[in-house]
Length: 132
Image (cartoon, rainbow, N blue to C red; front, top):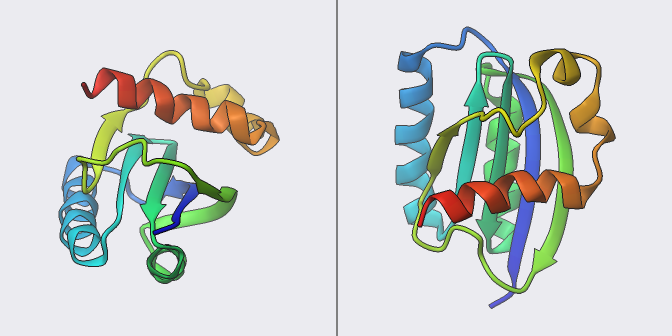
C-alpha cells in the first residue's frame, strides 16, 4: 500500500486545553478507523499537523479539517507519497511546540509558509525521535 503524507498549518481558534483535547480525542478515534497516523504540534499561535496513510483517507480527513471552525488560515505545506510512516504507532501524537520550532514572531512573519518541505518535515522527524 502506498503511504501518503500531508502536512498543513493552521491558526487555532480559541486555543485551550479543552479544545485541544477534543481535537485529539476525535482525531485518534477517526484515524484508527481510517488507517491514518500522525502528529499534531500545537501552540496557542499554530497547529502544525502531519497525517500519513492512504491518500483517499488523507484527502477526506483534510477536507473535514478545512471545514472545522477550530482552524483558521489553513495552509497545506507538503503533500506527497513517502516510503514509510514517521508515526506508525501513533493514531495522533501530540506535542507542544518546542524552542527548536519557529518563534511566535517568526510564525507571524510567515516563516512556516516560506519553509521548504524538508524544513517542515524536520520538525516532525524531531518529534518522532523524541516519541521513542
